[in-house]
Image (cartoon, rainbow, N blue to C red; front, side, top):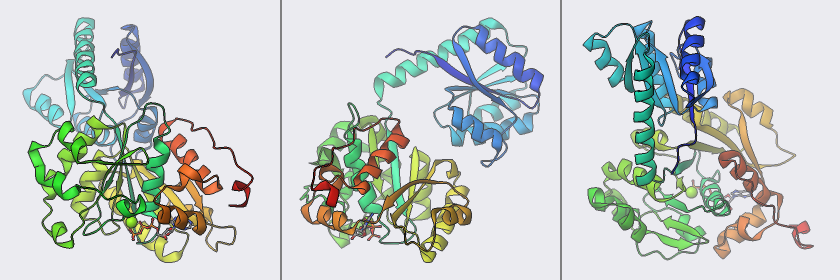
Length: 391
Ligand SMILES: Nc1ncnc2c1ncn2[C@@H]1O[C@H](COP(=O)(O)OP(=O)(O)OP(=O)(O)O)[C@@H](O)[C@H]1O
Ligand SMILES: [Mg+2]
């Protein structure tokens, strides 16, 4: 794989330093600056939002104010885990180097930056990127969760997975993390030989090949169902979960996680860390709003608010609570809306075939819109048949 271009950003409280550091990076001929901003001291910082939106591959942080720079490195590392962080500092004290490295810095450059030092640092970044692109696929994890049971989490996880299989050259995994018994296998009419219990049990022995051997195929999706036996769920060793999530990103372009509404907070924290997006599903009703509000505050504490994608399921013109009111109450924008269509939903569950595969309804179309927003890939709209008009 070739590294086409290094996109970068510069963080400093001093506009003059931002300008000169940006110029220095640009003058290497290898870096295109996407953003420069002030220190990012919290996850809600406007500066951090700008950085996340720009999505640079490298971020150069000015250590002029060491305390603020260290805090910024930590928040940036949380919000942009794949970014390569460099710091520039006038002080070469071992203690500040150690602190910066612990906060996520990969390179420590003495100020003023000598062009030789900068070129060498960029070369190390390129080498690292080439190595990791050769060994890993770096797929995306989309977690689907709701704060209230029955909101449509499994329906969204299953149909989103099926819709993602239409993206060019995509491999999609769907993992049911509900225990004791999840619904994914039933929604896909799947009698799987293996389940989540087997994968977690394999622990450190697990690699991409073994993981693949535990998956079952349905509607073009590699599926890992939840444990079948209620007793098996009690014995699950969740310690292996981070390793499983890491492996999923190395094995599939997209891994969709169907999460239970009562997810253990520690696991949810770890899952949200691995996820590119946390899709929070709710229906337009008051109890769902209250519970979703609590879930969103938890995700904020886990520094995952930037990843939240709010999805309102089962919307109808007659809804007493409007999307605008939901946005105002939860203080998050609504990312997607799925219309209420019980007939299509239940027919899909009974037949074991996701409705996005067979149905031409506006509900099915909403998933194409969701996929495009999440991945940037447009899925061609299925043509409506005469019958489709009446669905
Ligand atoms: N857009 C929709 N329109 C109408 N019905 C829907 C829609 N989405 C889901 N449903 C129906 O809502 C019910 C619950 O859906 P689903 O099982 O996906 O929810 P869940 O959040 O996973 O539930 P649980 O908490 O039990 O895991 C199902 O009968 C499903 O068919
Ligand atoms: Mg479910």
